[in-house]
Length: 299
Image 1 (tube, rainbow, N blue to C red):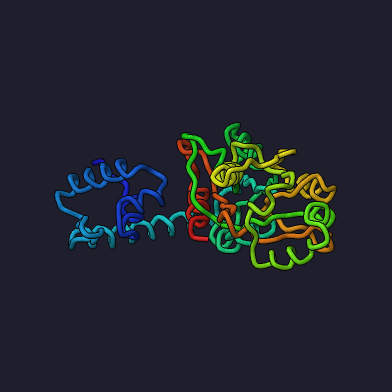
Image 2: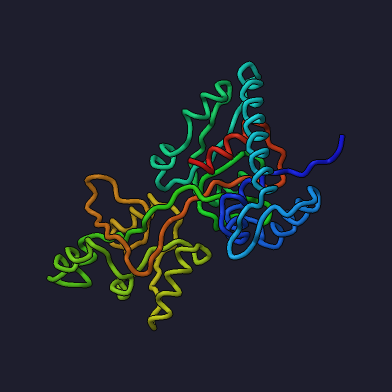
């Protein structure tokens, strides 16, 4: 049987105005994608895209895209047909302990179960470093978390983004801002600059996290250093320490209802908590796992 190149990358390429943008979405280098495209054009003996001023499919490229879409639909229908009466399957999905409810609500459970009713999804809730280790150890198939712990052996795609808040107890604000702390707190409801907390001890993630690095750089550019007195990736522990006046914190996890802890949206620097779906790059996945991965990209 003759070799035929995969068209998955080409289908993704047709969605974007440039090779660099498509490579970013595919989490490969621009050079790798350019080499792939050149090999594809050599295989079919035709120019598939015009590269300037932006990517535009040629007549041959449009024909290949249409054919690739038909092939993808055939494979999806085949997967669905075989899975309807197939053996039970299992997906082991890790989920970070921040915004867990929001993340689980965003999962394409209904669409997936309609296609693969015999496949169960097992959820493990943990902190991202632990999820990353379990993925490496083969105890998870995918996880939802920050990408600080991704390696060259993993691949990932963006899933959701959450705003970051400054968390502080009223008694801590009163201690450092005196009788005018309520006026400040009222003004911060629309957004707070991190620099306004420069005199207050901080409870932050370890210094290898993206949030911490961004905050450290922000402080250095303004001539001061963060007074980090406690480091933690644990949202419950961070909330507990904030409630005990150990310092203020940056978190995408809001305090629970009824908590006295105040939360102010961080306006400067602009930091968000981006959550990614992560898996091992070189592992052989079953048809239903590949389908789940693709559904997560579109969710």
